[in-house]
Length: 438
Image (tube, rainbow, N blue to C red; front, side):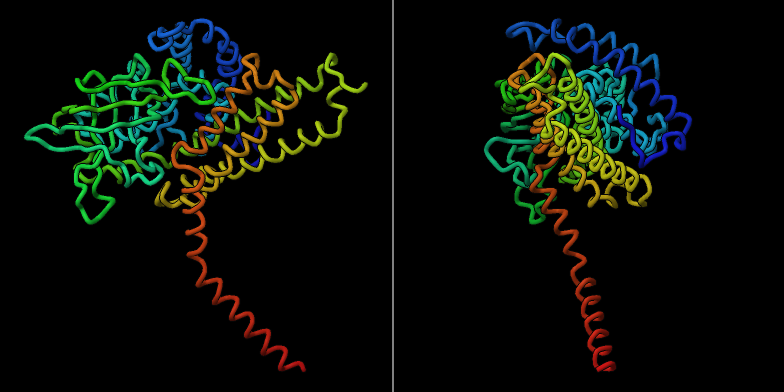
């Protein structure tokens, strides 16, 4: 398992070093071996959405006993945080990516719960925290974040059309959502629902509100689970949901009316880095699986082992380069979040670069590993196909590539005036020097 040369792990906090060593052992010797058991314990048919494999609760209990619990919460949350920096947690998130279906949940560090817990921790009232944050942090319930909609371009969150209307002491919610991760989970107890409460507001970023909706509220219908390349991701799933005259008390508003966009912008900064580091963990495992495959003595073509073919050697080298390039990029972004006075807002450029680069890198690494496995790379016999579906999904999640590229390009263009002035000054000096010498 490769480690980063960008960061001297021994120079980081003793707390991190202890947790990193435990997490490394837990992922390799508990989570990865448990993957087949998890699949075997899944329910069949409709029961896939009713049965949580018992092995998960066993793993959660062990993780908690080791202190590998809620590690994602940054130091700014004081008494809630285990005390890791974003850089330190990023290195642990890489480890969990090696078993992305098992390890993050086992350590209570899986999305969408992580983002939702940050919402409650950062913006929740004391009553909201007591009712929802405490059981989420305790791992007793799960949650979902309901924003994306099928009828509009959800890459621009200001397009959201779900209606949130106040009637007396209640909000009434009507709308259709889809790709709502975790909505199919029998443990899902609460939705954070994004909608428009003031569609006529001239400030389009003040039209939206975010409301807390208990999952058992009348009027909620889970229409169907969505599939990614045939994978339904049961028992959590990514579901289509209808909210039909769903009523919740006014105290279920998060931060206040018209502040939904503000909340969602504050929800995702460090979370994007977590996704990126898990991509690196998946990439490392994929490369290891590829190396094991091509060096298997029984795998020979045209009189050579697979590892003796030049194209295979080049593919391995290219994957090594790409994984390390992205690791440096992501760790740099995590460090910028830690060091900048404005936190994630001060590292928007670095976060966007990481978010663009990591899933695409993972796709390429997985594609090479799958190719080295022949048709087996597409099958259920190896983890590669599932990883690939995950990689492709992440190019949409938390903002599609195009949105982050657009933001990154605009940040770069802000330098235009300074660049132009510098070039003009250089050209003037060149002209003056030429005239003085000729």
